[in-house]
Length: 117
Length: 114
Image 1 (cartoon, rainbow over the protein chains, first blue to last red):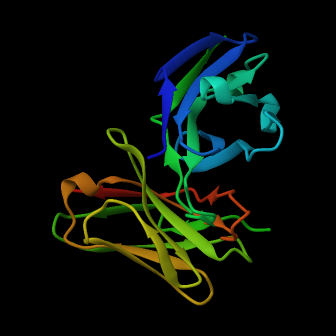
Image 2: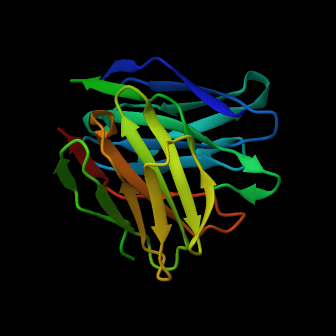
């Protein structure tokens, strides 16, 4: 079964510092991977997605992620943190049954990003 | 284009009661997925509907049910509420087609069971 592991439930960085949020997946077939962000009392917003095209994926708000098959990783990065980046971040994978889209996202446990002034 | 809407946003119910939550997807989208979010279990998939048919189901008891209407709006129902059903319930909308994997989430319904 496909699964996602996010390393570190809390990450704290200073404003202007590099943001690195870690995500590892387990999958027997090439996965489709996503990063979502959730601000307090809101739903999830899609940051970026990997669907087997370019391995370096650029998303919104200056975030990007690199798919590394050899490491089964899809870490999220941002060169310079901003106070507004403080939120909870979720890595997710979508499993397939054959070639069918199951409509089911499997999420990691989430990482809360704190940005200190 | 309007986003995904969920009603109500907040709900307080008593153990043993039942509740119905509503989700209106993005116009033109035919798939609606439902998720439960709790501090302990995180985000868990409940079920997905496409063109009024349940296509996929998560590991939740039969007290959790859903349906989808011809206009793609979806409802989920929880019967005989338990304290552990307190959660944020999120619905997500997508086109539902095989090559479209993006899901767009609504703001959620916060259910509190007392």
